[in-house]
Amino acid sequence: MIRTIANVIWFLFGGLILGLLWCCAGLILCITVIGFPLALQCFKAANLSFFPFGKKVSSNFSEHPIANLIWLFIGGWGMAIAYLIFGLINCITIIGIPNGLQCFKMMKLAFFPFGAKIIKR
Image 1 (cartoon, rainbow, N blue to C red):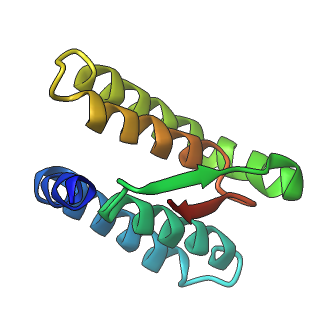
Image 2 (image 1 turned 180 degrees about the vertical axis):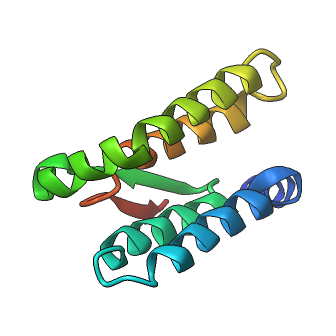
């Protein structure tokens, strides 16, 4: 019950926009054959961005190290830093701590999405 309420609040106050931005990036990357693997990772991040509460990110960098490094240099580090900043801002208040923790979870996925799995708890 609490998880559902937290997901609804997250969705209304940023999750919808964040998820749609990830979907748009994925659609743009689908235009080329080279961008298709990157697009799949964007759709994975969109899935987590819409409703992150009750999900866990299990990353395995060694599964696709070259793809993860390419992702990191293309823009993964920028997305991860943005998630870090928003997570820290959310954690300033007691009410924002749960949202900050979700930002830190998404930061992990933004760094190395290849080989990462989103697990429902």
